[in-house]
Amino acid sequence: MGDILVITEHLKGEFQDITFEMLGRAKEMADSSSGQCAAVTFGGMNGKAGELGAADAVISVGGSDDFNPESYAAAVQSVVSAKSPSLVMVGSTSMGMDIANSVATVLDMPTVSYCADINTSGSGFSCTSSMYGGKMNAVTNVDGPAVAMVLAGAFNADAGRISGSPTVEDFSVESGSGKVRFKQLIEPEAGDVDITQSEILVAVGRGIGSKDDIELAEELAEVLDADLACSRPLVDAGWMPKAHQVGKSGMKVKPKVYIALGISGAPEHIEGMKSSSTIIAINSDKNAPIFDVAHYGMTEDLFDVVEELVEELE
Amino acid sequence: MKIAVLLKKVPDLVEDLEVDGSEKALNTDEIKFKLNEYDDHALEEAILLKESGAADEVVAMAVDGEDVDKMLFTAIAKGVDKATKLTDGNPADSHQLGKAFANALAVESYDLVFTGVQSVDDRDGQMAPILASYLHVPCVSVVSGVSVSDGTAVVHKEYSGGMMGEFEVDLPAVLGIQAAKQAPRYTPVSKIKQVQETAVIKEVSMGDLGSGAGSSVASMAPPEKGVGAEMLDDIEALMDVLKDKGAL
Image (cartoon, rainbow over all chains, first blue to last red; front, side, top):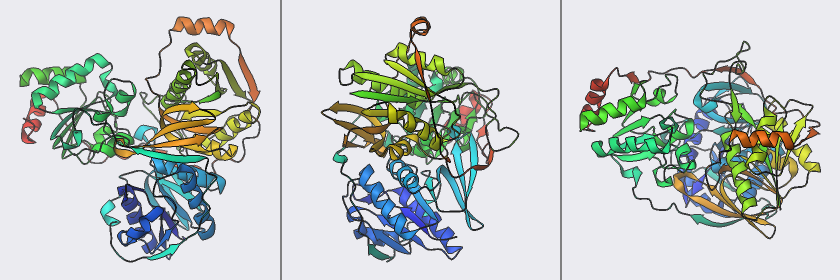
């Protein structure tokens, strides 16, 4: 096994959790072999290199603090070309998606998406991808240089949150062609409720079937004094406002009790709610991945359960 | 202003999924396929841009396969102007699919290419940035909301926590669409049948697909069940949990 390069991710001057999740795993793998672990930072984030103590070295490419799909990918491409790591770890995130695929395609390296686990294997790595909405795991063994896109929450961030003083190398890169220009960061519109502060959440997913049936979930939320949340498809369908969305591009929530109604549990949703203290899932598909993260489950028809529950509670 | 929308079918996750005899791939014999939901959003966003007058023409493209004609006729019924089917090949992964579309787009002119941000089976990477690399044009992924004027597109790229980055992109460009401005439209079957009788799907050979992903699946299996959820038999048991956990 050779060296591992972790592509850090930051937003508004803070390293994102995915950075530490990848660093922790990278350090474990590097420690168990002769390899080194280096982290690539962008913009002025080299000023926070002390937070990246899990890495042996920090490679600062400078440039803008604001993410740019083109220039960030071009910078990573330069670093990968120069350093020839055997594994490049990138977040399976909005920013990571632009970087990983572009770099891997141009440099003709394989990409392994949706990695829920990565281990050293012989002279290479074994990557487990969570596919088909979390219903199948596919193992890919890579022996040469490869790019792994790591799912948020796959590894423990605390293992990578180590302060220290890694060496910092200023690495000069081309800035790209300027065909993509960052304009501004747009903050989320304030909704009627901040679900990140809710103690109890009743969350609805595609299994609810129709917009009108959300009313039933609202009734349950009312009797439980809970707030209403939802998975992405309901926002995309225009059934629920964005401020109620839990998951990858929505909110990260950790209520005391999270009741998931008709939510299958795709990795993108689980990322946003798995830290809830108690998760209760009601879904008629007994194979739904949500039951793997839920503490309690019911496979009865959600309408029957909710109706009966509301009746009992009233 | 011309937009090409790339469409792909994926296994419907409502189905019970099983691996095939090789234990390296899905058993696709019994399962239904449907249009990738993000491709449906890409299609909707393109049609909205045409309806607003920002785009002059929208072309839907897909690789030949079962029920692909129907998928393309449906796209025409929804509002695209033309449909192209790529024949003479069977792309095995996102890289080969990207090559097939890149070959077709080398002859078909375009200003923007829209495709779904990801799909449930793209283990080897997401097609939009892969295709953009083949075409040597810029790409932005995870886009919800596109506006176009004077040779540039302004796009909103979603980050976590509801934040978005706004970017200006020179055309031509490829965009990986997460969500259209509105939910994808529904088209009545009667309209699709009508289109089927009059519209013509252009066929183009997909050409050389290259060597593909550069990696392959060693094994595939449903995730190992952990301890999992404690299953509750009735409402009383559910009420007890709610009480115990302080929700009542």
